[in-house]
Length: 166
View 1 (cartoon, helix red, strand yellow):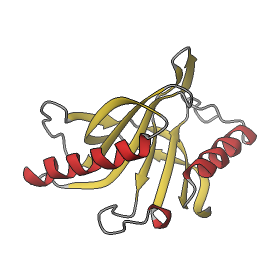
View 2: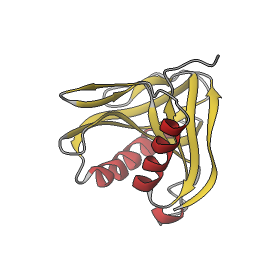
View 3: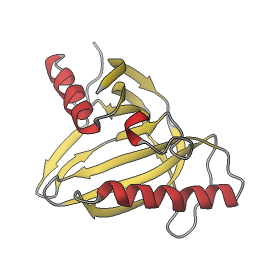
View 4: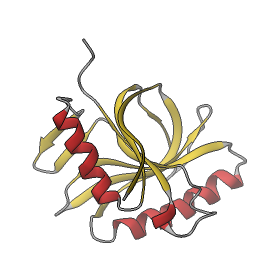
């Protein structure tokens, strides 16, 4: 893994988005992500929707069970969804962030370890279904359509913090 920036704390505003959310097992999750990206790109391109970075959001994480995930794109304004494509918001707040290339699992561990060492509290709760996150996502700073090799993607990992400064 190559760390490009961070770890650090970044304050983000609300960001409009559209995406597809579903539950899938961890095993095979990234193949599902890739199929959903194709479906989402077709939808936004077909409607002429202007959008920014693609993201992969983890709503509920259970590495041994079902994962509640979302593939989306950030839009400059609210966009009406339909059917599987839903409008939403990546919520404002303070985020622990890190930009990296390659090895997403290692990057997640690095960011979480850093937050723990810094005494930061992640916006998360535990339940029998897994870890529920207020907002945890990977934003693909490299366009997945122009670079097929995932090991070359520049990715911003962001996990919203529960705590407030001072």
